[in-house]
Image (cartoon, rainbow over all chains, first blue to last red; front, side):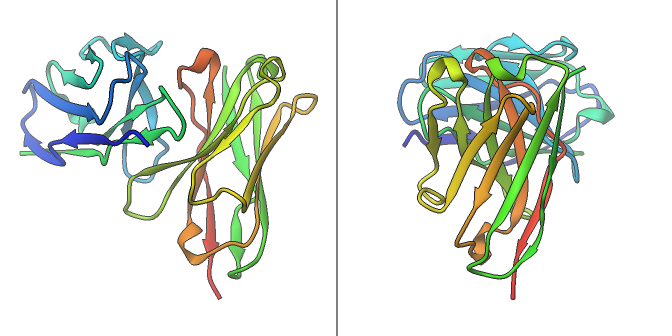
Length: 107
Length: 119
């Protein structure tokens, strides 16, 4: 199985900060990488697919990059509605696997 | 508008069975692979399994933790995917989500349905 390691597991940031979350795959997954945002009590919401493609309707402050084993999700200017938990997922091969999540909290 | 609506969750005793449904609308259901993902309270996301489209022979795949106990199926005439869960264990307690993967890339998620396995 492909292991997905996300870091950090949590971070504190201020409104307006630039935030970067990383995700590392235990083996190469090309660009079969997605990012999701989840707020408490809600279903996850898809942000990025194919490592760097923005889902329709997702604001451009979110961006993704990477290929192979190392990936990043960047939020260019953190806003109050962005405080949430973020997950990466590889879908290169079964079983699909998720990173452990990164909780973004208000500083 | 794409919508995925899960139903069928509830309280079941260990060893029991439950069948979840995922009703889809707003897109061509028959052409999309459908996945199930679960989340135990306070924990991360865990992939459960998938079913591909008719064009891909309705192929299925499962997580090791549920293989042999869970079965995913679909009825394209009803735009619905199913998750049949047998021999349920307390560790299967979670919110279960269905998700859409058109052209392999994941996008929409349902709101989830809670399954509680307890005596």
